[in-house]
Length: 438
Ligand code: ASP
Image (cartoon, rainbow, N blue to C red):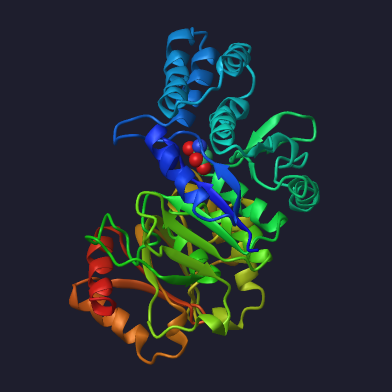
C-alpha cells in the first residue's frame, strides 16, 4: 500500500469547519497515515494567527504585563474548535499548563510551539490517530541547527510503532530538553522530515492555494498554476521569494527523492503542483516554468585595467566580503570589471568600511555601490532545449522600457536572472510573463 505524509497549514485548521474538510481529505485515502498540523491560522483576513498571539503573550510577560485576558482569546479558539466539532475532549488542563509556563517565562520558542502542540492534540483526538509529540522525535543540535541524521533514526523507529499518527509541526527539542522551533512556516519542514523518515511515496502539503503560480499573484492577475516543477527549479523560485512552501522543506524529501504535491484544502479536486526530482521523466515542452522577482539588492562594481591578468583579484574581493560576514548573491563579471550583487540590508551599515577595505586590498581604478536593484529570475528546465530564450526575455523587457543593468545566465541553463531598477520590477515581470505565458 502507498504511504503518504500530509501536512495542513494554519488556514486549513483555523476552525471546526476547516477541521472537517481536513478529516474528510484524510479519510478519503487510507494511504494518508501521518499528519502534520500547523497552529490555527487566520479565519478571515484581519484575524490573528495563534502563533502570533503566543509570541505576543511571550512579549507581554517579558514586559511584566498580565496575560490572563489575552491568553483567554487563545483558549477560546481551541475550545470553540472542540465544541463545534462536538468532540468529547477536555483540553483545559493543557491550556492551564501552557498559560502557567508562559507566565513563568518559559522560552520564546516554547511559547510559539504550543500552537501546533495543542492543535495536534485536538486533531489526533478527532481523527482517532495516535499523537507523537515532536519534542521526542525532532532533534536539534547543541548549536541550534536541526540534526537530520539522529532525527531520521529516532523518528523512523517511532513511526514504525504507529499505523496512523499526528505529529505537530514547527518544533523539536534541543539536547538539553528545551523546545526549539524552526523559522516561521516551519511545519512544512516537519512534514518533509517525517516523509523522509517513513520513506513515504508522496508528501502532500495542503494549503489554501491551488499550488505554485507561474508568477507573483500580487503582480499578475490570476497567473497560471504550475503543474510540475523540479526541486531545483523550485529552489530558484523560492530563493527569489515565491513563498508557498518553506525554502528548507525541500531538502529532506529531495534527499530521499520523494515528490511533494501542493494541494488546496478548500478545493481538493484540483491537481495542485507536483514538485519532483530533476530527472528526464519530467521533461516539459514549456520553455519557462515560473518567474519570480525580488527587490532590495545592491551592486558593488569594481573596475581595474588588466584585472583579468591579476592573480587572486576575485578571491581578495570576496575575502573582504567574507571578513565582513556578507554573503554574495551573484557575480556577473567582465574582463576588467567585477560586479558583486549583495543584499542591501546586509551592507547597509558597512558601506564605508567595505569601500575603504576594498581600496586597500585590490587597489581598483573605480569602485561604486548602486542600491535600489531588483533581480528577476526566469526559471525553466525547458530552456536548455529552447533557442532564443534570453533574447525573448531581453526583448520583452526592452519593449516595456526596462533598462537591464545586469544579466546572469547560470551554466545549467535553468534560469536567466536580470538585474533592473527596483521601480521597473513590476513592468518587467508583466512583460516577461506575457511574452512566455499569454
Ligand atoms: N505556526 C507557525 C507559523 O505561523 C509554523 C507554521 O505554520 O508552519 O509560522
